[in-house]
Image (cartoon, rainbow, N blue to C red; front, side):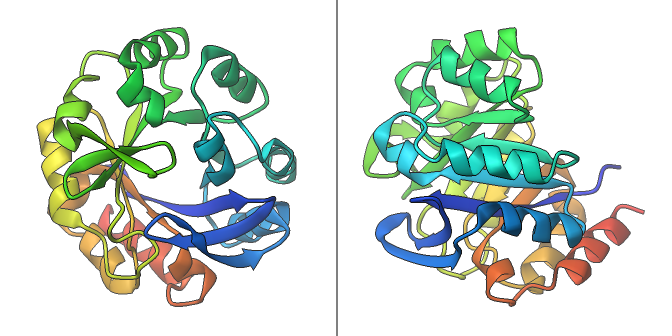
Length: 248
């Protein structure tokens, strides 16, 4: 049985590592002005994956923090990286994958143009993930600035036969608020689709990690942690050891 992966998050705004509250760009806390150094710290702590989001790119519709992402890739060449934010055409997908990103996350374009996701997944098997960010059950787009009419489960099911590697499911109401993961909604999505699901939004403490170590969460690929790692509420060594022990 595979170990649930803990993905440390590096959210990029104006070249800095930040954390937002409820996806609000006006409520950003800067935790590190050197993203590459932060990536090295996470690697030294034992993380095998990084979850990177170009926040400015998500709003602009194209990559904005490319220089910071490239610096991260160069600083931790032995670490797997999944990247989202502003990835809305095949050229951008190909560009990031050729530069060392392990898999790209398609969010807004998955709602606007599902066929694009299918084409990308066919062209790059195992390297395309879908980001489903939901508020009150509806999927948000354009950097969470607006809501679509489609539900999370409905969107996830659209890609059942597309060859998508993973779905990153974020409960926006919990993101950055340290209120705990929305395990119930995440598991509901995971049970509704055959695509591996990653939980995101609200991971606050070791208690959330203990919840992820429970048998019913074995169907999840992993979970993303941001603020709790930056402000010290979550000890990386303890969290990684707990998840590893749960799968022994």
